[in-house]
Length: 136
Image 1 (cartoon, rainbow, N blue to C red):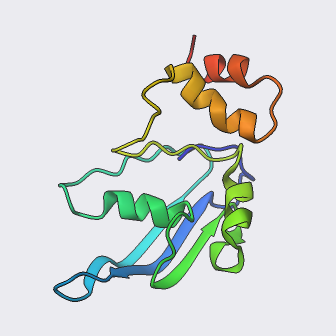
Image 2 (cartoon, rainbow, N blue to C red):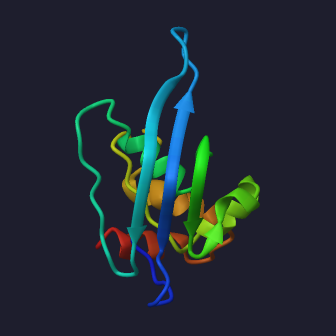
């Protein structure tokens, strides 16, 4: 996760975060007691074996998934106090996440896939911005 943030505040903090999901065999503990602080300018790679909770950790940290318990703050905002639209507004233009299984639209170029969310957000320069972000 990268961003421009206030130098003295963490970009992301998780405190004693747990995530438990239901399954046919009963509840599955995906995350247990996770504490994490990511500071401005820091880059973080989450690695581990399949099924270890990497994508779940990123989803919780970005506010895409709600933790079962614990506190998550993104850009000094308590994600539990924001609805889905509020979390999306908080991320927009400030956070970048690359998931292990990203979902691109196969009939579009990489530039078009990157530009589409910018266009939805009302950016007039979506395609040039996408090219810049992709280093083209």
